[in-house]
Every structure is written in structure tokens, then in C-alpha cells.
Length: 194
Image (tube, rainbow, N blue to C red; front, side, top):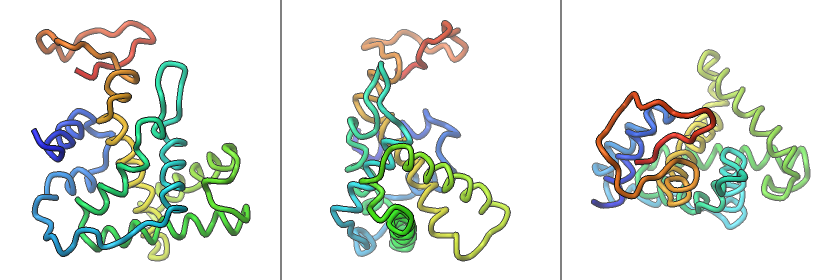
């Protein structure tokens, strides 16, 4: 099984946790011409920001490492460059640039360098703007809303496709038995990865 096939399988398992747009990209990414790949590049500061955004979305807990520990910060730009058409790559990058500009305007430094409380506040605001954009459809908010949606989706996909996501964040049975879609979970038990 190649990498794309494995990611499609994880996307199916995550179900509605990933937007329809991201699911569509994953299922049709094999049709992207080579000339459209790597349409954007990311600076080291932007890569750090992506890593920190992902880690706010899925933080480290007592029982499992977060998105940063799972390497999601490297996964996201790889997926953007390899699987998304050039137009979507550019929209994602424009949204990231706008988000970083907000951090610098408000806190005078990159998102990756501001305290955790402010990171959470910025992402909570962005999440609400993205939800509002579904009804308001403001042209000036298209890129930043797209950025947040894809960022959230790829963080979930990358994390739950990683070793940490499969073995620490979820219950893992090396040799699973038969499938039982209605198997009862005990209170506080993790969902199954296998």
C-alpha cells in the first residue's frame, strides 16, 4: 500500500472529521499534473507557524504526544505541495501569510513565538471567522477561511495517520479480531485505531 492509499484509508476512518473539500482532494490527487506540484514554497518561519498551529489544534496530553510530536508540521506542507492543485496551494499560502500578518500586527512577532494563551485566542477567532464565512461569503475572507479548514483537516489526518495517533491517542490492537461497529466503549476509553 502506498502513502496516498494509506492516507485515503485514514480519511475514510475519520469520516466527517475531515471536510468534503479535503476528502475530494485526497481522492483525486493522483490526477494533478506534475507541473502543478510544488507551486508554493514555505519559509522556515512559516513552517514553524504551521507546526505550532497544528500543536494547538491537537496538543500533547498525559496519554499521548500532540501534533508536533507526531511530525504533523512536516506532513502539512508535503501534502499541500504533492496533493493540492496550484490554485489551492496558493490560496492556502495566502491564508497563512494573512494569519501570520495578524500575529505580527497584534503581538509584534510570529505566531510561533507568541504565548500559548494568545495562540489559542487567535485560532479560536479564526475558527469563528471560518464558520461565519460559510454564511457571509466575504471575498476578502476566502483565503484565510480556506487556510484554516485545510489546516484543521490535514492536522487531523496527519496526526491520526502517524504512529503516535494510532498507538497512543487511540486504542491499538496489533492483531485485531472481527469488526464490530457497535462494540461498546468503557467510560473514558479511547476509540479504536484498528
